[in-house]
Length: 244
Image (cartoon, rainbow, N blue to C red; front, side, top):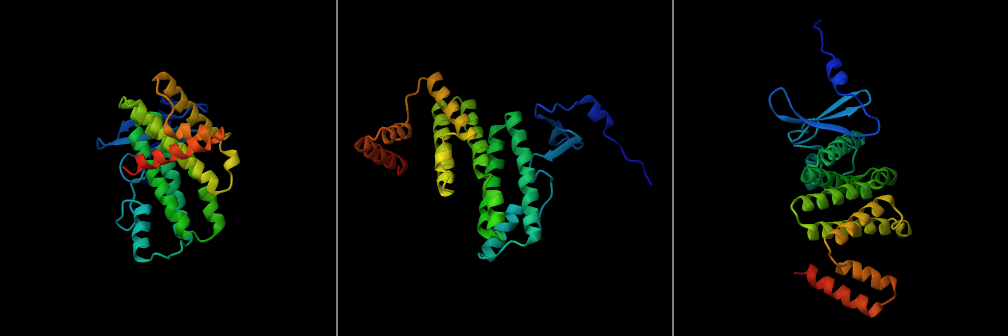
């Protein structure tokens, strides 16, 4: 039986910090880029292309792609235990890579992985075996949207487009609000930690770049102060802009 190599050198040279996410982009043995994440008991290594584990499903690039193909053939299928297990594996893998991209400040890649997760959540919602399993995943949708919004805004800032970053933040906040409304939890929206963080980022960018309140902010304020005629005008203007 041949000897196997341990990770002693890697772990000794790269200490674990329980208070910080430690991630690095390195070269694999064949020269490809791979992501490594230091965890308490070792190192996770993820591919930068395709699924983080580099695996495929029946020739499809990911479990999501496999499920979308199945959905096209059988629109009313119900996920079985194996499919639920494979979905959870893919959720976890893309979560690890998404937070790694955020840490590495590769914001466009974080957006891509968030979009993948949201699409997989849609499939799971539509074909779940029961309501409890659905809710066990849907409860994380605002969290994924938080990451996506944060990453998209930072990507816009990297491109020196502060107005786009602010617009992205406002759109993300409205989408998260819609999720809270859908689950009859709108009263919790304003105090939610993720919402507070995104709002603070939006407001700080508005102040730093001297950008006035957007139409959406003006509308929210008009509703809050019961200026209903003004609110109606602002809604009409927003509708006109969105239809362009």
